[in-house]
Image (cartoon, rainbow, N blue to C red; front, side, top):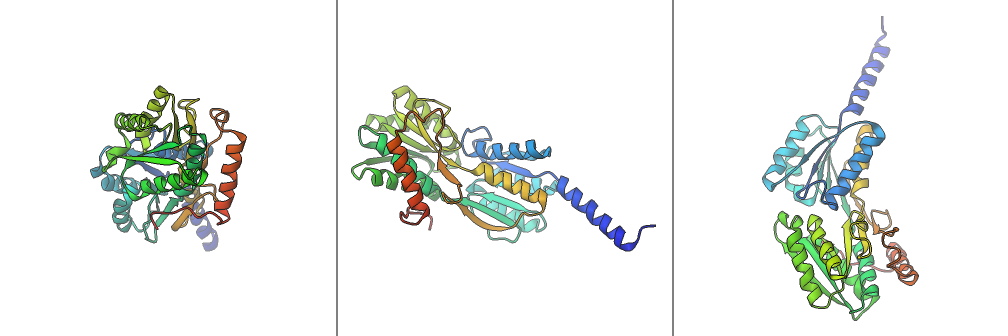
Length: 323
């Protein structure tokens, strides 16, 4: 016969084990988990968790904005250890559904929802964009660099402003051209339009273009390759897509945010609240690898590294348009 203390301990152990084995869930934003950019980074983080723990995860890829709320609700109903919503467009849906399921943990990427069961992870994209803006201006032969954004929203303007400031910091005479793809979420999955915008900038003398546009960016990169110009990737390391014309990528560690949310929920260390990841936390950065290291001189890399440290030390303050 079990003593009351032993019985209680056994019950807690069984409950803890069950909680640990409850699979997490992730909802990818429009563009899909294989967009080679933002969603792809989230997917990579989830796959890393799966590989390391042997625990699978539930997932959903939305195809239109009307699906958001119901999809998150369905994932919560299935008893996920944590429901991760990828993208700022999920703000309203998380805010609604998290109130309906106060005992379920939710993590949202790229937005802040102030609720006791929500973890909000944002990034200081402007800091990383500043560095690739420097790279663009220092490598450009025409003194003209471009930016193609996805949906015209504050967070994409945040990328642009950092990029512009970095370009002008490196070369005050630099001209920065900017186009946004559209005003709806579909702007993140329109590579044809991305290519058109890039070609338009090339016609105006631009020889380096930075795309912060999700899957739309693949059109920008192809246009750069076709024109013999340089492109800069975003979110995931996209240097491998077109080696020789991909100057670098502004990586945003969405993969780490997703992986950590899943592992923390499994370990029982997940906590609600907001946190922002920038250069200091290695949440953003510049991708240097075998695909692009020959494109950036030692002097360019030195200047970028010096600016990186200056931003971390507070000696350079990059404008955050969302503050």
